[in-house]
Structure formats: structure tokens, C-alpha cells
Image 1 (tube, rainbow, N blue to C red):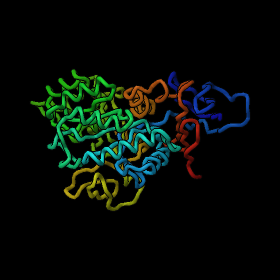
Image 2: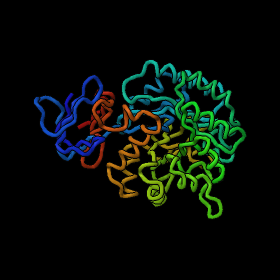
Image 3: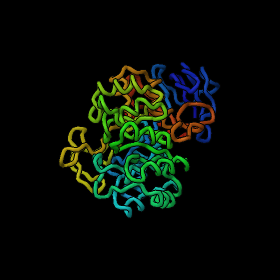
Image 4: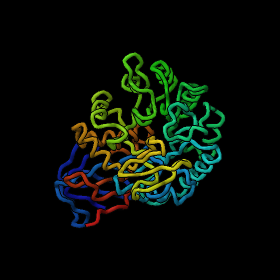
Length: 383
């Protein structure tokens, strides 16, 4: 496959009037010019080619959820995510009884062995159950437990070693030990649903924590006498910080503050979407809880935010509007940073010869025109 005419945002620089060749699912050639053949996909010079987005925190979409524990649920997510520019993702669990998590992990292992077409599932983000009950948010509090190394090892074995990131609260009993245990195994420990103090976060970073789950949401905030998780996230360059940029979870002004303090090199754009994404207003399930979705906002009966229905392309356009950042900065936050964090930057996260052909074509308004996953066109904008 040849892609021609547009501006390519390649790893080593922007290529205008670019030509990109795909062979066997990989990027073979990137250069300027028309090439030697007439065939191929030609786009206007005002269009842009960027690497696909990687969503490291997504529970579900289009009626499907990771906790459904079915092959079809994960296949549905993989099929619909390219429409918003996402070409790879971590299927995210929720705090539940151990048996429900076990089923989801076994299903994830089976899906990873034979993936459907579309966005590539890279593994599992285990959100809970090792979190703080006082910062549960939409995580069912009755299933929250202390840090348990043996239980995590059991979960990891059931998943086939595919748990890549774990959200936990380091201040709970066994939390710090679990952070160290995860880091030693090459799993990313993420601080979230946590009431940790700055000192708690310092200790967690020392133990190997390298990530913050949905910054500002479900954590101790920045206070002038106690920086909390939020303040510590700004002070520790070791920590990547997820952000849900839907204008609901974080107001535009606070998004801008975080961008100025944390910077494009340490922010990871996520959706934290649940099954109602792509569907109409209504009532849906999240971890056995009833969630009401109205006009882009998902809440429990008491008004607690319950994930989002955010699409990744809306999130990155919001980020540009809220902060004034450039498309190259969005690529850093949406593609490069998650790939680096997950240790897969050698094959994903940027446009470079030899890497997976995970590509997104944008028009002048940064709408998704086409998405290519591992060399296959899986989404085309209807004319």
C-alpha cells in the first residue's frame, strides 16, 4: 500500500508532500515525492498522517465492556476504536469480586492469542481492587481490598502475563510492597484511587511507581499545606500522568494548568470510556452498578462520575483548544508517551521505517478520515 500527497508527521520530522509505503503490516518507506507508481492512496496536501493513538485506560465502547469477559466484547472494542483514531489499547478492568476479575483476565488471555481485526489489544490495565475506599469513585467499595502480592500473582498467571499496568493506592496496607513487586516484574505501577500524601507518593516512586491514573480524579488534591497525589505528580518527573480531557472530568482551565506544569513529555491522553461510548443517552452497567448517561456525562445514582463516553479524537481536539498545543504535541501525549511507558516504542507510537503501520489520516479540521491498523484499512470516513 502507498499513501501519498499529505503531510507525514514522522518520528524524525515532518515530511510535506509525503510518500509512505506499507509492506506486510510494517512501514517500509517514508520520503518526499510521488514515487514510481501511479497506484496508491492519494490525499490533499492539507491532510495529515499521524501515528495511531494508544489508549491505556478504556473499559468499554459500543455496548461492550472488558468485564463482560467474552471474546466478542473485546472484538467489539477493537472494531470501533479506530473510528476515533485509536489503533491500540489496554483493556481495563474494574474493582469487582475476584471471580469476576478472573473471568475477565482469562478471556483477555484467550483474546490475545487470537485477536480480531482493528485496534490491537496490548494487554490489560488492572484498575483496582487494591485501592483506597475513601477514593473509590465509581469503583464498587465492597470489593476493595488491601495490597495482596499472592492475589496479583494469581491474576497475572490467569492473564497469561498480559497485565501491563496496575492502578493501586500505595498508602493502603501492602500497597508499597505491591508497588515494588510490580516494578520488579516489569508491570507499570500506577497511583490512583488514592488518598496518599506527598510522602506516600515519594515512597511509591522510590519503590518503582511510574504512572498516575486519571490525574485529579479519584485522588488527594493539591492543598497549600499538603500537596497530595496531584502536587506530587507535578513534582515527580518520573511519573506519567493520564488525563481525561472531556471538559467534564477536568475543566479546561485546569487542563491548561496541568499541561503547563507537567508538560507534553509526561502526559498521556486517555478516555476511561465505558460501554455507553458510541451509544445514545440511557442507563448502562459498569461493574454491576447502574450508570446514567446524559449528554456526554456518565454518573452513578449519587452523581459520582462513572468513567466517560469520550472519544479519543474529541479528547485530543479538546486538548488543543484548552491549551493551544500543536498537533505534534498531541502525537507525543497520545502515541509516543503511552508506547514508551508500555515498553513498545520499538514497534509502535511513531511513524518510522520498520514500525507497525498504525496510522491515522486527518483532514484540515483534524477529523478522522482513515485509520490503518497493522497495515490494514479498518476505518474510512463516509463521504
